Structures are given as structure tokens and as C-alpha cells.
Length: 135
Length: 73
Image (cartoon, rainbow over all chains, first blue to last red; front, side, top):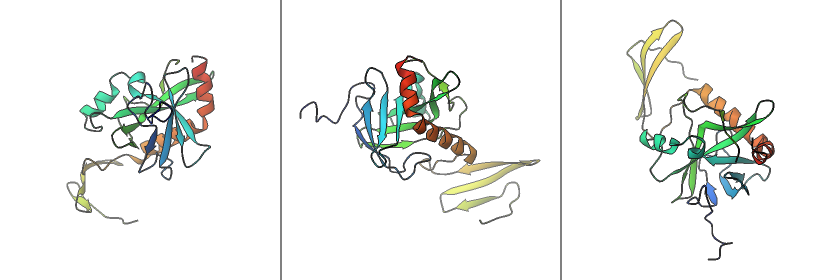
């Protein structure tokens, strides 16, 4: 297989297949089931692009890059299987705009099955708008 | 919508696997206990609504996110 055909990607989600299926969609987008991951060149972030709606996509980051140890915390609480990769969606808020990460709605990817689901965490220690630094 | 009257200590079953107990009533607040299979998420609806708003906002803000990240903020 050539590198161009390789469905796996470089860091920060090197073990995650490029094409993911969300059986239940995302919160607010239950009808969207197929997404493709693409690196954001020159950063540690990725884009999650809908295969069903060309206009729809998200910028995401490894949860552990935003909150070190978050994946382990969720594994410890029985919410995430060991070996899963946890991503968080990024947005911007404020004036001047600053990037934030949605820790309350992390995306859990099972690399072995190329499936993903979004959790909703009730714990206030996982905020909707956690501030993040630059790439 | 099905409306059921329950007292403290009583419960309802949803299917065979999900049980909702009325733990106590404090003024206009009801404390519920939910027993459900681990794979069934139990969430307060307003929290789900907040996450949904944030997810929709993140989709709308994709270009802005990239711009902010690329300038290091």
C-alpha cells in the first residue's frame, strides 16, 4: 500500500482510521453518520468532515492535548474502552475570539472498528468551552 | 406523554432494564435515582441541549477556528 492509500494518519491521531462511522451521528446531527479525518497542516489539530454534507465539518483536537489525562479519566470511569482515542471539538468565543474546546461532548473513536460516538458528560469539570492555546 | 403519579420511594420501569426511583421531593425539586444498563446514557436534557448548541456553533465556526489557531490564539 502506498502512503497515499494509507488510511491511517500521522499524529495526533495516528491510530485512527481516516474514515469513521458514527452510528448515532453527533449531538445535534443524528442524521450524519460518515466523517473523514484530515490533518490541519502545520498544527496538531484535525478536521472532521461530514461525508454526507460537504458544507459541514469541525476542527478537533486530541482530548489529552487539551486536558492531559482526560482519556484515562474516562476509561477509569467506565465510559471509554481502553485503546479508544478521544477527540474534542473546537470553537471560538469572545472578543477578541479565542479557541475553545468542548470537553463536555467528547468524541470517542474505536480505532479497531473505525466507529465513533459522542458522549455527553454531566461533570462540571469537563466544560463546554475550555480555553486552549495555539497550535 | 404518559403522566404517572408516584410517591417517594416508588418507581417506574421503562422496559425491563431501566428503573426510575423517586428518591425524595424537596419543594419543587424531585430527586430521581435511575438504574439503567451502562450502555444507556442517562442525561439531563438541558445539558444535552447545551452540548448540541456548542456542537452546532463549532460547525458554524470551523473557518474562524482555523484562522484563530493559525495565528496562534
